[in-house]
Length: 196
Image (cartoon, rainbow, N blue to C red; front, side):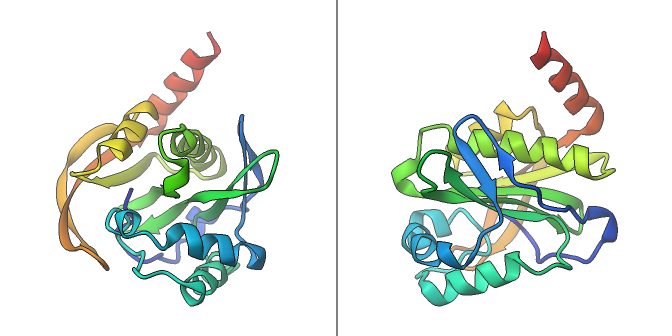
């Protein structure tokens, strides 16, 4: 999953950042206590190549900068640490960021936690948060064309293909991405179907 541009200051995209509980996780704002685990999980070139703004190598300095950015009160969107409900163990990060197109979903999960459904679980929670906490009409997401795992997450959340483009990645340079969108009407329908 990639996030394409730096945050923009749009008051309508500000989210209070409530703690979110999913079936297996507690999603909360990252804090200083996450720095060591964040540095360990994020220091993985395979992850950095899929996330546009993640540097590699990734150490404690980068983790501290990320935590400081995530806790800025003026930031539009919301950033979350993904932690296991029982142990509090960090498994990755996810968030909603303001881009030139509007609110965009982003996520990454540490390699020891791949293929366990955590990214999908987090993405579902953030899609719901985006539409419940803001008045957006469309939520966006983009993934590298070489990232089938992220594409599966996007599809499971109901996003529809919206085209291709290019982004600048800190680690991989200029790379092609697939863009997807989910509008409020489709999200409402999906939520209603889930209750049947």
